[in-house]
Length: 275
Length: 259
Image (cartoon, rainbow over all chains, first blue to last red; front, side, top):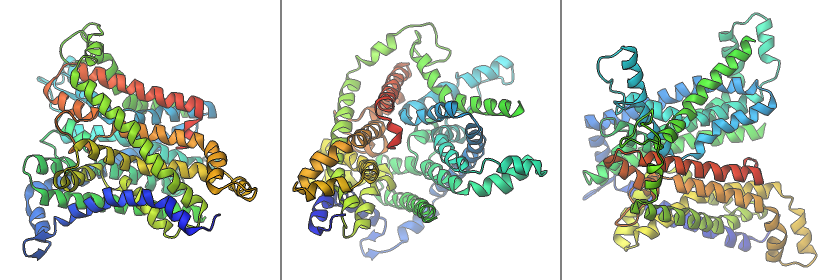
């Protein structure tokens, strides 16, 4: 450990000043626009914003999609993570690699694939009409369902890897012991697996939830202008309506939610290292 | 036996969901037809070849490459000293510095892009290209600091203290003792930063002008107008490029140790 403070500051300041100037200042200015009027500071713009039905609908839809995607990711994530940690070491590594692989592929490419699958002449519709279940093509693309599927595929890997690291710390005999003692699988999950992997669930859940709330590409490609989420609404407010006050309000909502999630994550991380 | 059946059926379903769409995109890009479809109509490589002839793709590919390489290098030049100061010095206000450099992960990219456009590009007359460069550098900075910090923390500090005691200057100790030892971490940070910057969409959404546009933004615009398989072809090419880079990094560096 070196003691020289001037040297330390000289090394650290360029990065900190860069972040402050190009980041903090412009973002703070943008956020201030939501509170500023000709005669001072008010929260009137926020009241107006939330009294508009469109904005309410988009806000609630974003929350709803965030929650349902997180919930679905947790259910599938537990099933997948539990299956992966029970694998022998050699195939476990490969399987984790396959789960992480999609994270390296451009989200534009990953989302675009769903157009081929969910579109009017896509695979799902071909299959449905081949079986004779439907008369005409079913509309899936540009619905909330399509956005849900796209978001789930985008963020599921984050949940699975968070749960894998939590379940790996599960004592080897805990599950068999509970089974031998007469617990059914539901009780095993609720009383043994869940309490022992809660941290991993919170970490994964936060990543999936904030990722879904702040998603742009998925609602833009799979939702279009019919299924707006907060980020696509922000884009529309700026490019179509030239409304920077609304943009500033949406920005504050997004930053507040993202901040809250990060503080939660940091708490968990420090609680874990304190142990 | 039932345990095995459970394991493999769950895992195949999850992998089909996660990776299946990618195979469909690859298959669709070899189509001979004129519209995006699966199963592909016939087999040809004409859409793969077409990608290389679209002028705007060539331009935006170069833009994205310059941003990803230049932005990541700049982020490393800013981030390595900061990481070094935080790991080896009693830095006054270390928490503030840590907070500042991790901000770009917390604030959604679309907001950063808009803020830069509104307060830098328009009033100060900074060019869109420079704003993009700044935005991509800021975006990669948290990753650079975090990955380099991790490899600095794994490196024992008594070697450089010994070098200093034996008469080397502090800078000499850094360049001759520390830097060679954290080479792997720096390379890992570079690859992570490159992939992050290259695939990034939201931060560049508002920062596009005539002739200046990143590749993913260009693709988003193109797919709204044209429904042929060329976007599928380009997506597959880019995916193989990313996977190739990450695989090579894992093979030669043990990339996953650093991330």
